[in-house]
Amino acid sequence: MNKTSKDKIEAGQDILAYCGKCKADTEHVISAMENDKISKVMCRACDAQHNYRKPKSLANDKKAPKTTKTVKSTTSRKAKISPAKKWAELTANHDPNSVQAYSLKQNYENAAVIRHSDYGIGVVTKKIDQTKIEVQFEDGVKLLAINY
Image (cartoon, rainbow, N blue to C red; front, side):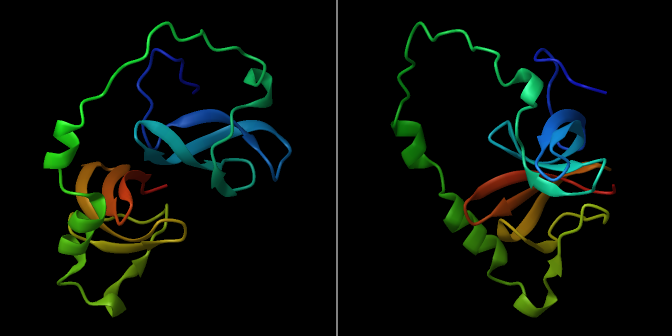
């Protein structure tokens, strides 16, 4: 099931993406999100996990030009705790030897400590549903798919 631009895209959903291993546009499952953007996908044809790449069939689509530039406030950023500091607080009391390797096929509960091959050590901060978790890594929060 492909998602249109009007639908909310979430980890665990199917999406059309270009697979470098298959050298074709194939169905993928979204395995990680970063700032509401797809970052990692798993090819349903060859089971390869890789960075998300737009399908070649959509590569020539042109985006509408931006008309205005949004100015962001810097005051709210100063009040927030940095991702690295929050990650350090969450991992401070965990035994590094008890960290389990992340697998798309496993189930994880809140406070579980995992080791992701790309993002490093993270702590499950929220189980969104049976197929998605929110994980705090040193460089920020990521949405990961589970139970696939």
